[in-house]
Length: 269
Image 1 (cartoon, rainbow, N blue to C red):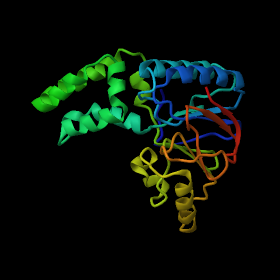
Image 2 (image 1 turned 120 degrees about the vertical axis):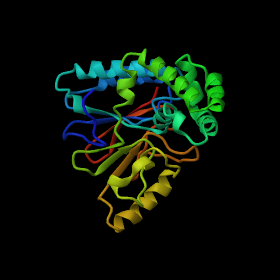
Image 3 (image 1 turned 45 degrees about the vertical axis):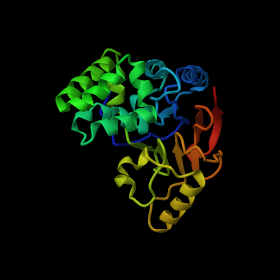
């Protein structure tokens, strides 16, 4: 994959398809991908809103299907490489952190925290041992490094997986900069260029985030008409109207939005 911008900028024209959090649900992606292939038109773009990995299905197969969908859409007339943007979500951040576990101050505590938040299913799906990882955490950095090297090798055996997971943008902006795409939201208290991990760690509901964003706009934040995020907290009451659009709700979903961020199509498996 080509060099990736920290905050990707989409080109103008066409419809933007935003694919919400999959959490490893390969069956949902298979159905959504088929529907997207039927609806795709020249000039369209795809933003994958992070959290592709997870416990809802088979993560390696999910990544395989994602890469296949990208190849098929790239083969369509008028498609360009920059029309496909993949964002980092909390699950991808956890995956990157586990590969650096040997540098953690309390590695076993960190590992257990990540295992409880979806990592266990991902490691098992790649056919690797969680128990050995916990033992390594008790035996020091060198033992952990051997375990993480083995985990990285399991990923390497899956063609394209490492390339995709190492080519994730933090967020994306529409061509005019008025629509923000992120995995879980934004922190209106920080400038857009200083969000750091706020794009994938956010527990605010749509209503709370909308209110915070309104106050931030009064204080000089960019003129954002919409934030499109892959998922929100479990207590969230999501809808297709309003400044905050949460794509995945009960099940993974994809939405098509126009230049102003308005929903013109919604697909659910």
